[in-house]
Length: 123
Image 1 (tube, rainbow, N blue to C red):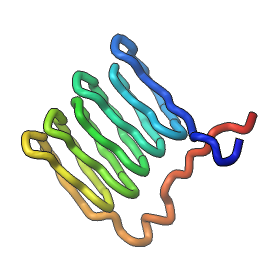
Image 2: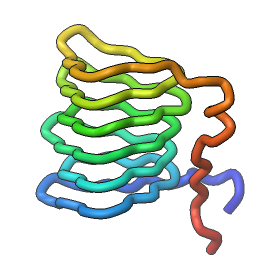
Image 3: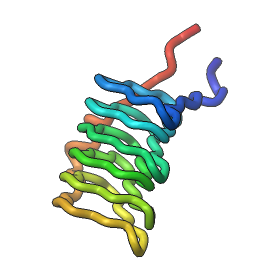
Image 4: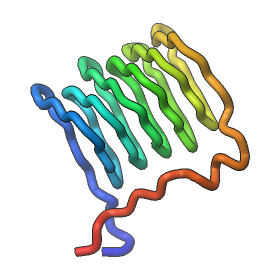
């Protein structure tokens, strides 16, 4: 399966997940998540609610997010996004209208070697 898509996972509207989520590929959150999140590419959509500690490669927030995020590449808060917590990231972007209530620190060079490398299970 090398060279194929890393996959797509969805936490859909009306679904609440509690606990630890390890996601390879792209994870779209339209529902609710409470707990811990480790993943490659995470997108929260408008209307979603996440309360979590996260370590991700890239994250886009368009819903509500509360907790701490370490983004080893990028974190984007879109105009509909509301973030409360602490951010450690390499690149941060905040669209006009997006809300950020918390602290932001740059990712230190030595921390980049600790980034999660989530891989799809072998079939």
